[in-house]
Picture 1 (cartoon, helix red, strand yellow):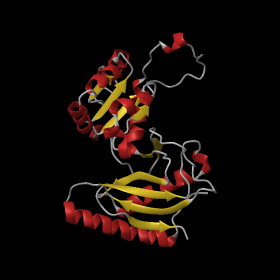
Picture 2 (cartoon, rainbow, N blue to C red; picture 1 turned 60 degrees about the vertical axis):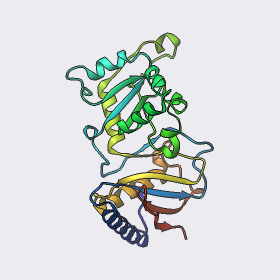
Picture 3 (cartoon, rainbow, N blue to C red; picture 1 turned 90 degrees about the vertical axis):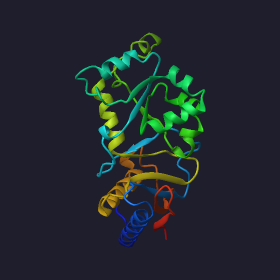
Picture 4 (cartoon, rainbow, N blue to C red; picture 1 turned 180 degrees about the vertical axis):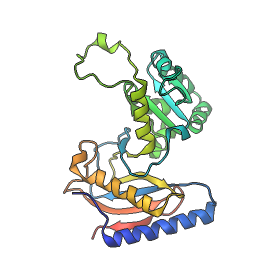
Length: 263
């Protein structure tokens, strides 16, 4: 059964979004601001903090790949990935602003100034799933506190269901440029969330130049993803014993405006 906002909540959402957008236009003019959906749950979604962003499909796209400055972080060396991803006529030929091996990133991270430059230089950071778990200790609080710029996890090639795991096989490096591009399109088009050990989820649902109806459509899709068991194991986390307690909308600098409260 699909999720829908109660009639009163839908009306409250429209009012809150109109008020929020009007306030941001008055304060910051036409500067585009991200709008967040804040969800308070009855119980935490995770027993410990998690650094892996889960993609939530939404009907109204957040962005396009070509509109973003993207950094790809790879295993050492980066050559087995750089060549197929940047060669002429590759689906990812002009996709990445830079492709950086982990070794180089570690050198950059020794300088706080260089790390700040890297933080501001890229809109999106993606990392090979095999090194993703190493990044919190390399990039540090600047990127991870408040999930400011969490690297997204990507696979460099489709997993082979017939493959036999072995050390020898792990040394065989493959890179499927089309598969990498498809993952990036999903990351950029959709939104995401990170389960925390507290009871609050923050999800981008659009921008201040979006139509109200599109923002509401994205809100409904986010709630549907979190509540519907068909999206498990990534989604469907809000089960019968852990429901939505309240929802709010806000920008980075605004107050949180309520749109739903459990009776």
